[in-house]
Length: 131
Image 1: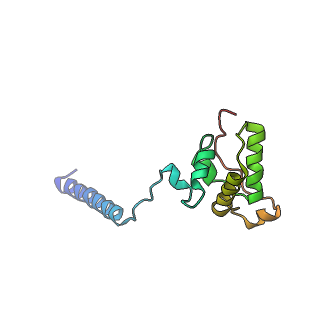
Image 2 (image 1 turned 90 degrees about the vertical axis):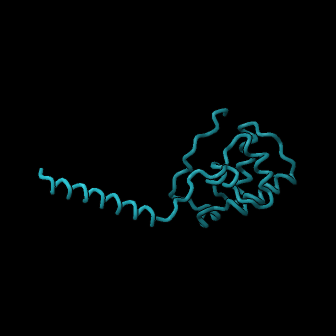
């Protein structure tokens, strides 16, 4: 390879590196993938009750990825109490928890309110290993 061919190769590589660097600088900033776990739950009235009653067994990712009707959320709490030994929750606290979940984690498919079966898979998360 001649000296001029070598110089041209070096210039081409340098140009490619400068071009790729310019593209990276123009790219929008990446959205952080790793958010604070508490930030996954909307900061509205009732979140503190979710943190106190749900986080001892579940991550916020489990709660944030689940979307159900109020009735299904109520059934889920009852199921956790019967099958998994969850502690009794006073009615007033349970109502506030259900208010929060109904407002922030409603069904993502409006047809679910009418008992429609969704074609989507169940959430992909590991169950609690203590059960």
